[in-house]
Image (tube, rainbow, N blue to C red):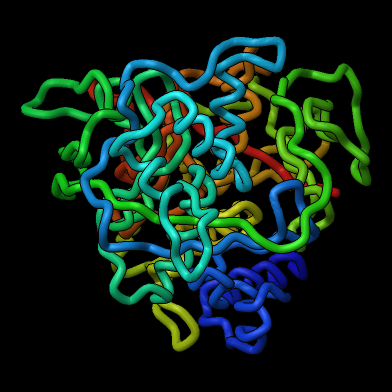
Length: 435
């Protein structure tokens, strides 16, 4: 219970406007906190616990110009190839991470040369006296969305924004700032006149998605830059695999170890956080198929998981519920609302594996990390099905976030979804935190 109380306080702090106590220092290249104005006039969207190979802080600055540019001038050619450094597949996965935006942007420009496209446009900008802006990676842009939700850019246009992260030879990631969804339009998701598009890299506006109802609008840009102290060098291309080792509850653990409860360790925060340090996926034999997200007899508009309060709105709490470290708290809230019954969160919370009973339904970001390490490995680890998986993150009263383990795209799905013609089944895989 103490850990949950701390989690509540931590997540609340992420979505309360940050006092600009060190704004002047930050703007001149000194210490920064989230929400400060950075040296380039952008808002600080990410603060590393310690200096990284790319820097310590990241600032982002939305612009109104540069609309309607394609991602690439060579829309069916990948910027990656298999090499001794690592497979093209793993290079794309690594390109999602915080700190990779500048690297990705340089690779796009190296392939395309001069011309009118998103990465080149941003790289040629000078804003706030700084000329080292780049197109943000998938994860960097998501942190910018978090800042946007608390009104730090009051005039920010709600549309699709390009990332610098490629998903395949013909498709790249972008993010909808209407609701935070990150898409690639791959596998028939993106359609024009009901015909699946072959590539989204050459498009100047997002494809209209029938289920979301959001209009097709010109792509926009979010110039981003890293600054602050630097330490270390860029790590090599990742190569997820089982280590053959088993680690203890206290650690230390490596990714790919068998965890204390017999599952795979798929995430390491690098240091102990309020929720722990490591995340372990339950063994595949425990996976449930076809459970709904909610207890069907409950009216979610009367029995709400999130309420508006003086400190924060229900919308902001839903955004916070997507973050790493939120899964256990989400699961507790869902069960408090729905009570007994057969649904995904309760299934996860009542699971007992090898004597461990502290499992929970992963948050959207935790679930995406599971996909990234286990399913998107060159040789999948304890393979998950190429199917949708429930997260514990609520989208709105009627929908919850899922991750498609076919390609990692995230979608909101109706909480009462059961196997049918459109979606065969949504699956449930529990995780636990320790360390």
